[in-house]
Length: 84
Image 1: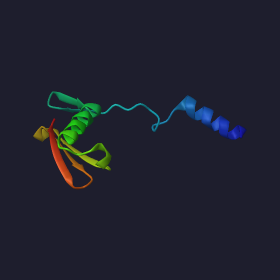
Image 2 (image 1 turned 90 degrees about the horizontal axis):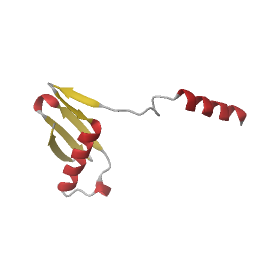
Image 3 (image 1 turned 135 degrees about the horizontal axis):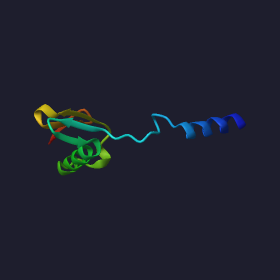
Image 4 (image 1 turned 90 degrees about the vertical axis):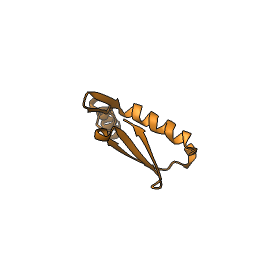
């Protein structure tokens, strides 16, 4: 028991990649978008298309700043696109 507590305490002090706060920013030709902003736009687009939140199992996202677009595929069958 003492060993486990020591390891947990050490992990809390050192931190790790898994527990670190992450912030992804995509920059292209003077424009930048955060991961959160793009995910929020995708979420709103999905809901506007009539897809229920409970239907979403996985989302593949393809950021193509050279085309000024972000493409997504929901559950391997529903495709969509938002502006970058």
